[in-house]
Length: 256
Image (tube, rainbow, N blue to C red; front, top):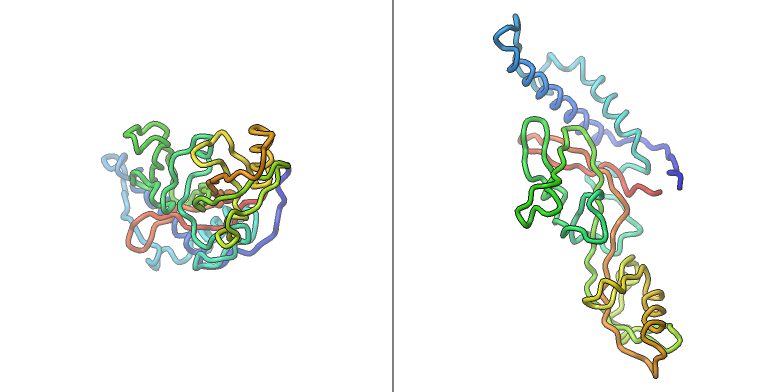
């Protein structure tokens, strides 16, 4: 399916943050080159900061590079405070985040923030923890350089609900008061403790339950786990004013 291209204007705070990240990456690269050639170089030079007057003339060039990077991201950019409406999200705040390339039938547990996936900081890059890092296996770590983007998915754990499945494969809430709108917006369901019964809707789960376990003599109570994965959301690796690396959310979900 083709990706729809949308025109948008990046907010200036996002452009500035990404421009500084690209500048810092260039400075780090220059530091490495100087260190390798210190004995033979006629002029090694010193590291400068974004705010140094000597760099003011280059600011617009870095901002242009930042805008070019952002121009490849579809969708409308969020405001500089990282907010924005996610109409498909069942809740305002995710339970956790997962690099999208790790999403699979068996995914590692999401972590509370994208920054929690940073396992190692070195030079102008970080290493993203591998999928089995919690078991002490560092295999699968991924390097991300300042100014570059990585896609994450937000995860929402919506707990469990109880439904009654009728003989015809339809369903109703065991207690309507306990079935909220967030649960109905989920895109993942399964019978409690049985991932093999995965379905993308309660309608499908109930239909499958009645078909596999039927014919049913009457309504049967089923406890269901519910969760939701967002679409992919791009983040850029930037350096904060205190020197720490962080992932900054650049845009809303990437719609295919």
